[in-house]
View 1 (cartoon, rainbow over the protein chains, first blue to last red):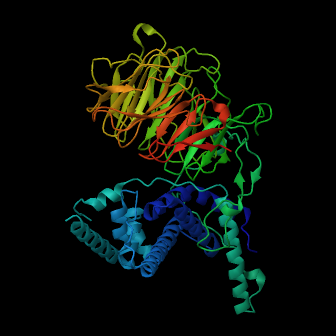
View 2 (view 1 turned 180 degrees about the horizontal axis):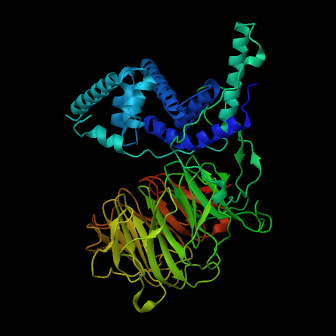
View 3 (view 1 turned 45 degrees about the vertical axis):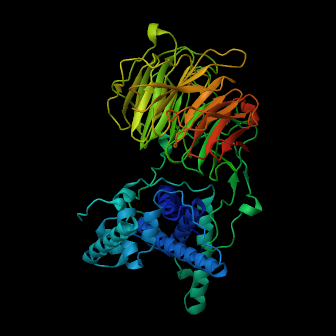
Length: 164
Length: 466
């Protein structure tokens, strides 16, 4: 009880080595930090191995967990920044240096509501077809397509404003 | 969905660079998952006393036929790797993982140690934090497993050289004529190659290595970008550690990075120096084009894609020819580098009394025309030449590292010299990972370390590979 059988362990290890590098790389692009990327990828695998007895598509499950963990990470960062601003209201906010070139788009995606962000990341970023995303989120394909369209329109509008 | 192209497309189309798990991560994940299952099971039993403990099934994982990510090694076709670091060690208290919480950083529960006396000969970085180093370590006759007399070893860092851990290496020795390896390159931490003179490949982050047949030729250079690896295969007669000596014929080969499918690149095969004298060649890749400095001093170029033909850039020879190779296979008299804006060429004269004329040339148009761009400091014999993404260039010598304070072609060059920089005997290699971060390999491999800069080359810090 509580341990994998040898065959399960082998399968899990195979899945881990096949999926971890890309999953963690995907997360790194969104959080811009190796340690946080490792933390989230490990947690996603932990949840996968701990809670699911049968999965048709463990890869999509991993990305779903990771998407939620990334959202939690962004929220935590937001709370920390707000708290910092509250205790140092008289100190001008220091510009945050983001070395990654994609920081503008990442910040914009961060600002999308969950309903739009989840399908956007899973489809455009993780590369899952619309049909798979619909299945993962439990929404009709048409709804996912509409959500993707709205997400892009929203991002494009904000990008347009930001670039003058 | 037909959407107009915009910044979002550009961002989404960038490749995801894989991030390899740190050693021990899987074990940690497995143990965490096991603890959680126990907690879940305990709660389930507490909430439903009639449920018999034996009825709780062990979760079964159903794998799809293909789950993507890195290809897995086939044990039947892959040579077991040298693990010259058999004893795991516990991480330091500061690096140990915390309790089973989402905020616990994924640190390995055990870290493979780097074998002692690690004499680094080559280093490669795939991001600001992740890099591999190859060299000879331990004591011959007491290395391995699997072979006690083979001491080729590898180590990796996932924190920009602050700490290192051991990892499996190709089961082959130091360069000795046509056997052994001395150099390493990796595309992304998953696909990598050890070469010089033999060619070995890994496609699972150095867990296992496979030797690639090279038809009796020696690999004297290798670079990789955009999912493709390019290598210089040469016919040589050098003996002992001088594997790249007496090379008379050079060809460029390429392979998809994820496969071992090496084929000659059309237009750049059978290259020789004038009169067939022994010479060397050098390969430089940018994000979209590759450049081959041929043994005769010509420059060839082509796209960095599979099965593309490369062409002579100009019928005129460059201001200097590569000449003989240094011990790692790189040219000593003409050295090519990409600066982000253009190409730079360092022409090194004969050394005398520890000094050497070093003339710099710059090409803003992909090598079609070359303009003199000044001289590098005469002190020291040039061993390696490198460009930085934002323009400055660096010369590693047997006396230190010279860093230009501006980009070639942008006016009069001035230099900042870091003499010695802590490594007596100078450096055999210098290269920049980003505009600010770079790494150098000491010429004296007995120093058991590599050097890092985090400020564009102004200061260099020793990173013991241990």
